[in-house]
Every structure is written in structure tokens, then in C-alpha cells.
Length: 422
Ligand code: BGC
Image (tube, rainbow, N blue to C red):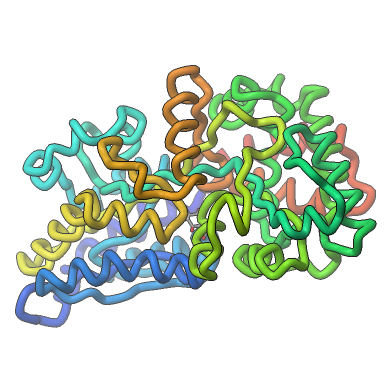
């Protein structure tokens, strides 16, 4: 029985009991479960909180620390099973379909129609936010995952004059950084961070088409191909540029190593930029953002979205609707995304108010979309359900922690692990 089946069984029991009414207050409360707890992320989510509170609603913060949200998702499932869902939670990608199928999410079509969401959002986004033709979540942003972050001062000290654009150039930069006494690649040894690196390498070695076959189609021939052996060989090589103390390190602490000039680079989605912004650093001057080497022209997307759970209290439902409406209004979209490192999810905003990394991200998003090179991020829950993602993470993380792991066997291990999880 997988997690969602267990959840479905438990939920049908829990639904025999009415959900506990939340504390009564003047204009309703919305409790929001999310995992935006790093300095930069907290600054971003504060914008939403303030706008909701400005309208007189009460915000109950349900932050659960842990990059990429697996801890938050565990807490969410436990709460729902015990009949105590929050009003709102960050839920993403195909997982929205699984929650939708359990009939627990509140439809947001009333808010969507009143505010013209269909006309504001791209088709890819609308498809992800709807279950059975109805909006069940509001998107807040678009993150790009295939980025390389660079500290140019460290590069200069190591005698590197250009950002790497291929894996060979990445290794060459790594060698120079190592020789100059820096950590070449800042990394945190956590499954989702390993998975982020892995998907970047799949995109780099196989291109958007191969990436799509591997993670969207779960195509066996692609997963066990010689190219996948190349990916794992590259992963092994990249680990030689990381420091030995990386086990368990949070992503934002890895970012801090680059900001502080201890490390030269980090491969991470653009929430990493939120830490540079919070540290008062300027894109293009204090740091550089370039596509993960070998992936220029392709774009792995990661859309953050907030889903609402069915509640009984009309006041609390009003608070949920206010949150959903505010999340797509320009005022929120500008300030939240400037803090979060992402780009607005609506395409009609003035990008001159954003830094050069965000402008490049928006351009590349539209270009990749036109050219069929826009792909959902596997590591950030946009391509598969969480069980399949977990199976991939297990193999990748084991591979990275085993010195003698064989790159030519890992693809077949992934395929077998996915099949067992499905
Ligand atoms: C989320 C981001 C978050 C990052 C680190 C990603 O999966 O989409 O919003 O900042 O994880 O926790």
C-alpha cells in the first residue's frame, strides 16, 4: 500500500468526524503550511502574510523547516489523517492531482473567474493547478532549477575568466578552484539536493528530449541507456569537487559558502538567489547566474502553489479566498518574487523591475516554451508523484555515498526502484 492509498483509507475514517472549527475571530483565519524558512524565503512569505493581515484576516503560520518540503508534506499528511487539515498548504505539481482525487481540496473557481486567472496564466500553469477541470491551487511563482551560481571574486582569485558553459569547462573550473584552495562546488548531502544535481546532469547529457523520456515518460530504454551511464559518471566526477563535510547540510548553508567566498559555485534552483538578495548582493555584480553547463536553451521549471483544504467556517473560507486572490495580484507578485528569486507566474508584469537573473529567466522560459524545451523538474515534484521521485532519490543518494558504485548499473536500479514504487 503506498502512502496515498494509506492516506485515502485514513481520510475516509477521518471524514466521519467533522473538522474541528478553528478559533473564532473577527474576519476568519487561514493557517498556511509551507517550508519557506531560510532567510530569503522567510522574507518572501512575509509579503503574503502582511497582505492577508492587511485585509483583516488572521494568518496562522504553519512553517515546517526542510528544503524542498518533504518534512512539510509528512506533517501535512499526518494532520489530514487526524482530521485537522490546515486551511492552506504548499502542494505542487502532480501531487495536486493525488490530493484532488481524495476530494479534500476546496475548488477555487469562484476566485479564479472573478479575477480572470485563465487570461493571466500560461496553459502549462493552468493544467498543473486544475484537478478535474477546476482550480484547486493558486500558483505564486515560477522557479528555474537548471542554474549555476558563481562568486566572480572567487573565480578571479582562482584565475578563471569565464563562466563554464559545458561539463568539460565546469571540471576545468573545478580543478582551478581546488588548486587555489577553494571548495569548487558547494553542496548539501540531502536526497533532494543530490536529485537536483542529478536532473541537471540528465538535462546536460541527454538534452530536453532525453530528460522528458527519462522523467516524464519513465522510458526504460532511456533510463538504462549508455547516456545514463555518462550521467552517473559525471555525477561521480562532480562529487570530487564537493567538500567532505557536506552530509546533511541545508541548501542555504551551501549558498552561504559561495556568498562568503569559501566556495566558487553552486548548482541550485533560483531560490538560492533569495539568499544572495537577503545578503544585499547584486546580480551580475556580486554574483553570476548562468544555465547549468550544457543546458542553455532548456528550462526545468518548478511552480510553487498553494492549495486550500475544504473547511466549514464561512469566515475561514473567506480568508482562504482572500489569500488566493492576493497571491496573483501584481502587488504580491512583484515583491514576493523579487525576494524569492523566482519570476512572476503571470506574464503581463513589467520585468524591468527585476534583476538581470530574473529577466534572463523570463526570457529563457518563453524561449524554451516555444522550442519545446520547457520541462518539469523531477527533483522539485513537478514531473512525477512523490513515490516515484523518492525511488529516484534513493538510488542517486546511495550512488553518491558509495565510493565503488558502478555508473553503468545505476540506470537499471532507478528503473527497478520506480517500478516497485508505482
Ligand atoms: C521549492 C522552493 C523552495 C526550495 C527550497 C523547492 O522545492 O519549490 O519554493 O524555496 O524547494 O526549500
